Image (tube, rainbow, N blue to C red):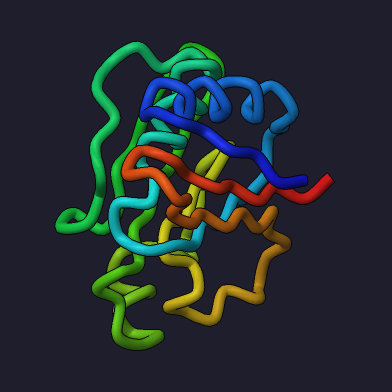
Length: 135
């Protein structure tokens, strides 16, 4: 399914709605250009999953953890990942998260797990985003 959002608020709202379908063990892979709305979408998801603090891009940390009463959410950013060793060094394969979000998933071979693949694109307007989510 293809969705169009016209603001960061709408992108976060789409994330909140999407998160309601997630279950423990899900891995969500998000791909798209820098600034296309991946982190904003995860912010909405995390909020819907019960996380109340700030959700920021893990570009430099490589992984952020968000703990709720019910879930441990892991949020990876693989933009700077160069090889399999990098994935091991950030504990990617030691995954102990209930829900995992992976930005820039296409930068690594993560075929060891089943992912829900989302694609983020710029639209015609500066704030417009096209987000493709499988049915």
